[in-house]
Length: 298
Ligand code: NAY
Image (cartoon, rainbow, N blue to C red; front, side):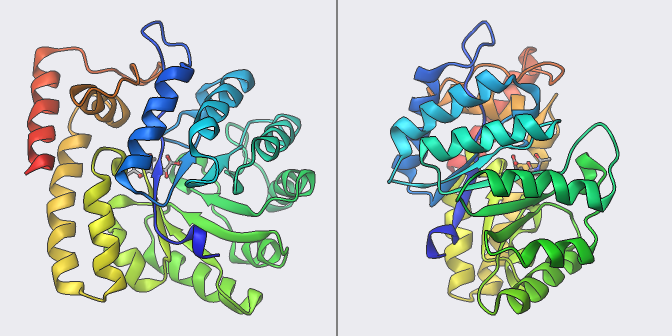
């Protein structure tokens, strides 16, 4: 399980100027993070706009990532889709590509009962021999994972962890505590809200997956090291600085658009986010991105 402990960038998708998934750009983006030394990538999640893409586009994006990253970084493929059959197909494809684990949100759009969500997840888990990581993000899915369903899921030996993106650190603590107890060994908990990385690690997270890591991987690797060394005071100070940057990132038209534009300023092209996500267009927005980029480099 050591390969799931560390800093995981929630990868943005790479598009060309027309907005199509671009393999060449995706490979360069993957190489960028490989060179930075992050533990791994979370592909096709929220930041990756998986739910805004067709099945073929999601496969294409993952194929490009794997062509660079296979055996060099831990790759988690997010395969959550609206229908169970589509998620099952994405799971099988991810296994063929050689990813290290699959992960999924519950279903979006319709509201579902815990029983329906369990059947949805079980179908993906049964479709491959891969480890599975639950993706809990109630603020976007509107599904509040009950601890009873969590406990049932954790009993499946393939379910090795959870990505906890809810802002409740109490919930995160419960997932770690109950997960460890059910397993009798480490149950991997990934911190979701980048703004609470230090708090998440203190209360139980082993690792972190985050969207803003993509523009400041060094700072999150530093934070993670400080937490490993239990240097809480220094870590808290760095978290304050990081949160100042995150506040700036969130002050633009759209987080993903701003992050992608900052990557563009560094020569890493990923295109604009997909509509309805707003891109960076105005001079004012571009100046904001330049200011943030400078702040990160300081
Ligand atoms: C993913 O799947 O892309 C993530 O792990 C992203 C989790 C992010 N939440 C959303 C809704 O994008 O990293 C966070 C988020 O960008 C960050 O905390 C800033 O608010």
